[in-house]
Image: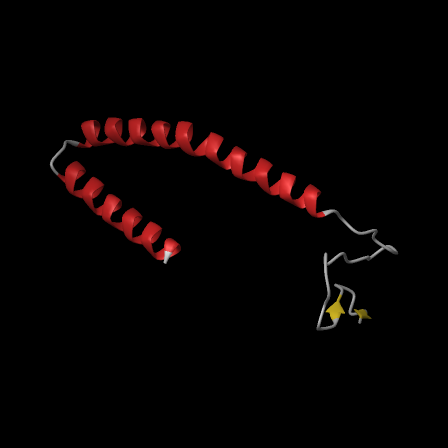
Length: 92
């Protein structure tokens, strides 16, 4: 439900933005779009950084296993299916 709501809000927002820009000259529409892009970068850049740091923190808190061999695979838990590495080798 959350992803659908975000997609719906994004679609509605894009539609409203297109409707707003349709009544503007090309120069004015370009300036408004530049302002919106700058605002999005200022807001989404730090938000992305926070999400990345939280993911790293969670990963470190769960603890990592020791990789064995050149093509070791750490799943962090039980695996109920074989793991096939890129060279066709199978583990499990």
